Length: 74
Image 1 (cartoon, helix red, strand yellow):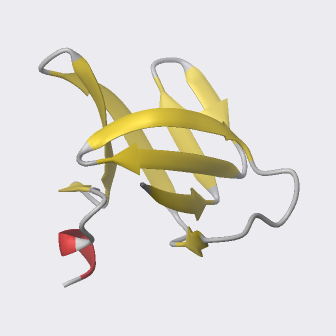
Image 2: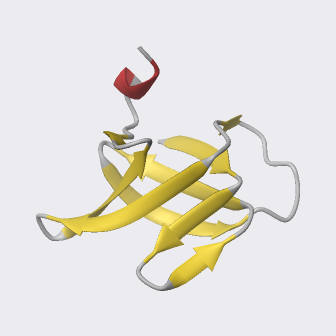
Image 3: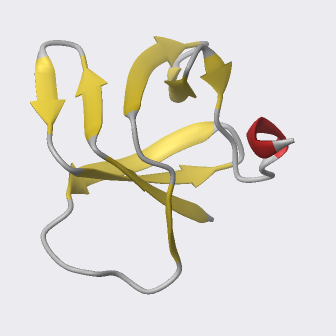
């Protein structure tokens, strides 16, 4: 599991500021407001867009798919 935080997460018509997104593989398993510092949370900042894909929710930052395996940071 990878937990990232950003200034904004957008899912459908819902906007969360600031937000925490939890990923397992390439799937968003949880998204919630950031209200306190959380252990093992990676701050990536900016805006994350969450969209449905193949029956699962996926998270994108700057058009790149986020995943547990961090290929988005290479």
